[in-house]
Image (cartoon, rainbow over all chains, first blue to last red):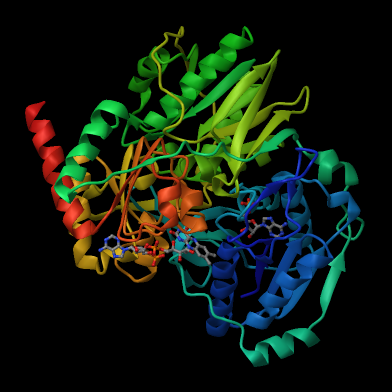
Length: 261
Length: 326
Ligand SMILES: Cc1cc2nc3c(=O)[nH]c(=O)nc-3n(C[C@H](O)[C@H](O)[C@H](O)COP(=O)(O)OP(=O)(O)OC[C@H]3O[C@@H](n4cnc5c(N)ncnc54)[C@H](O)[C@@H]3O)c2cc1C
Ligand SMILES: Nc1ncnc2c1ncn2[C@@H]1O[C@H](COP(=O)(O)O)[C@@H](O)[C@H]1O
């Protein structure tokens, strides 16, 4: 089974975001960049399937030179190949632009399954996997916490409000991975050394047969008007006194002041 | 503007979040002298149209067909795409529910239009709607406008926009969807409901969360008791989830669910940046923690420095007493 994994290079979840002086971008210069946490589940699932069924795992990212770090992480975990899709024309793109790039890359590599993260930490779009699947004409099953593969048949468990949906699909298909699907492995020292020797291919817009007008800022459907931090929360009250009295006071405040119960 | 809302139903009942989207759609249409349509797909759901008219739909496209009995993004995408074309939609609205988040990008790619996820507010700049959505799980907010002249889609975060009754003309239009069995590539076979059909944190108005301070899975019972009294759902920090004390569907935070309930209780949760990202837009936050220096107190509306094992039972009893008094 040949598997493609979409991995995104993002600021880690510890990042304290700042707005750039132009008010239209975030200043992420101090962030530590890593593989988006959900993509770790995708890589892990791909490796588990490969160990069971054979085939190749190829990690793909749309980004820039920096994103190679995340590809190396995937390689160190055990992926066989890695592809960086990078081109000045991709800059400033939205989820649809990214999906066009990734779908174009996927068309160049024979695959049975594509694994992506549930969502990319930061932009929080929860779109790219499904968009790419639609462009490729394959089904997508999203927010998956359990996956069984029997030949071409897939049985997926996906999280919904207050329960789980069991979804049946057949390959080729795309799956977005949610926490609970597996426990991502840490790259071993041996894996890290081996990853340094593996080749990372770089594909540009022309290699992917993409019209520069359909991707990047030119292809984006929306324009940013403003980025801002949330307003600080008004200072709260820390109660005092005997504990039972504090609880009484809390209930009174919740009812009378906050009107929350 | 012509606004089309995907009216999500489960078990023949339209979701509240879809009525919220419908009301938001009505507001958008009214601000631009436009009209509102809803599209509903399922089997035996024809009777839902009047309910949608009550919340503002001028037209209801009804795909009442066995092909829509079980959710499949493949054919639901076809159906919604068809409705958008027939109606000539300028804007498509979805609730950012599990189904909405699955379906919206499929429809957007099918129609080759842009999609904004999880919008929490919008305003009008003349005739142009301007949307705001949290990014970095609410560590920042991004405000964007659609580029002129192209239709676009938006998913709206549940529990944020009010559902307001405002009658639309409610003309029923059977949907010529053109979907057939060969279009179904992935389909829901079965739905397993969570233990006792518990309320999901993503849909709850009140959330009672516990963290590592809960000390063990057996202690979550006291949170369930409180949740029952206040009509809420039980949430958790990642520390509690990773310890195996509660399922990950309860996790609140940057890599869990991002929630904005009317009331959020944090018991034995320190307030790590990833947890705060998921809940600090809650309207009222109550924190109970032994450590007066815990960062959770920085976002709390009300705080009690103390042992949660003393506070929770007292609180549950106090709420009970309050309810008994009426
Ligand atoms: C990539 C990544 C993603 C993450 N995503 C999330 C996420 O989505 N959600 C999330 O929550 N975390 C997330 N985290 C983890 C986060 O960094 C913290 O480790 C976690 O939130 C801590 O959980 P906690 O507050 O329950 O535990 P702790 O930080 O250990 O705090 C426990 C608190 O309980 C208090 N306490 C103990 N006993 C009692 C008692 N009897 N009564 C009252 N108070 C008591 C203590 O004073 C302490 O403040 C993520 C981390 C990473 C690296
Ligand atoms: N630039 C990118 N490169 C590779 N994969 C991506 C990229 N952006 C998003 N993805 C994939 O799509 C998933 C969902 O991302 P998003 O739609 O941005 O929330 C991620 O978890 C990745 O698997």
